[in-house]
Image 1 (spheres, rainbow, N blue to C red):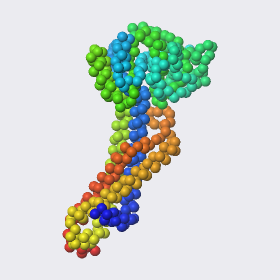
Image 2: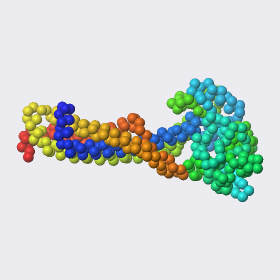
Image 3: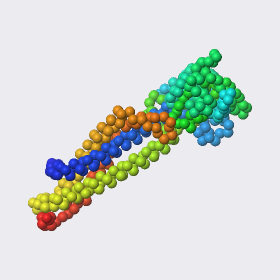
Length: 414
């Protein structure tokens, strides 16, 4: 039957070509959209891991913002116990700590509110280092205690330009003054020297962001504590299992700390991908409807043109189920051919887009990023099944009509 169905498919080449083209265009469009959304999902996942680490450990009040003042800080004794537990984990690779601070920052002429991240420059996973798109100068260096890297927006507010960076008068860069409240509530002030500018791609972040050495943040806040521990694992697949083991061990050690994964912390990524998922489902539904009605019309025309043929094969003993199966097989073959051609077309379009180095500025970003289509075999299944299923469903009605028609009525049809 499959052989006969294949011959019938190519008997009317013009109609078959039209059907294949419609299915191929729909499949290719779905594949390209899927590849684009998947590239964003994959890229934002890597960005989230680079920003947050695989795991973060902190006091529960740090996560729910219920602490008063700096009650959520992890003291040195507790930190040492956490680190000893981490080093016993088989998938542990490295860790670092972080201490955020807010206050006023200014020069002789201008000042602004800022939010600084106190990091360990010597750490392999220094927080925020992943997103520093250098606008001049350099990143924090190990051993430095009074240097700062400013967000490009914050630097503009303070009147500091790229040309101002570099050693001057025996200092590593332009001087600024930072003032913040200590953990005890007193005000403290320190001098810093700007050695570099950074751009995260998000203008609202760059207007307030600064990166300082951890020792400076601890000094101005008058504490030896940190607010969270950032953990890097050997591979991302070990994230959940390591989290479960560490939670049990922290509880056994009577350490009231909570662990969150990079996926828990990347809220914006979840929201973005939920929106992209809705868009993809809408596009898939639209293409499903387009292919459904197109193939339904083609198969219905085929039914009326082959009415006497159906009557003839029924008269010589062909069963209704066989007629139904024949029409259904023809629809499935058209769907398979169109789907495969569409995947090949979509793969070619994706390759062409990737090689063209097309750049655009995403919403919420101030920098251009490359437009990429992720070409992986996993993305071929969804578009192909949607094309095949829509073709199959649209063939059922004409196939039922062909199977149920009476022999006499079919033979006298003109």
